[in-house]
Image (cartoon, rainbow, N blue to C red; front, side, top):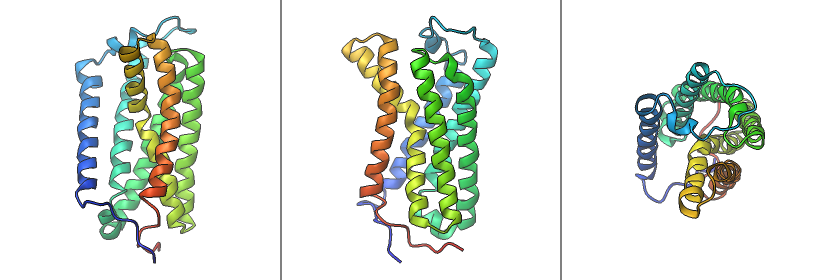
Length: 220
């Protein structure tokens, strides 16, 4: 069978995984320890159309953050060709854990969407992302059940790209708000839609130039 295109340097994957772990530690510390009441973020939530039950919202937000980090970690581990070759059972179990964590993120996002910064236009975007993300994840599972390894890998790349939605939202909104001087609500809206577009673009670039062909494995 055709082999998956190898990275130019053998240490590229460990470096990327290390960077992800550092980012996840930062997110957990920032949201659960340094600012567990989300005071800085909540200052931007003005003119909400419905009252917010803050204790419930905070609990849901903490679950959302934790599940998102775990989805990012489990997804990253399953892109390891070494794990795929040598620990197939772990790869399979870890893959199902990824699906569970994505589902928790989607579920909690559904609760949080109506209180989105920027109002309804962003609430609709978050709900759409949840539907599309979970649909892509389920499609990846369906493809591997059909023993379509290449299609499974491509749909997993597309699904995994959406683990970075929040990172891209805050990166884009920070640049536009702090660098360009846009109002925070406007910069956040650009961040939301920009992140969605960036997720799709980056996923297709990875599929085209990194995972060109299916890994050299046999599905049993």
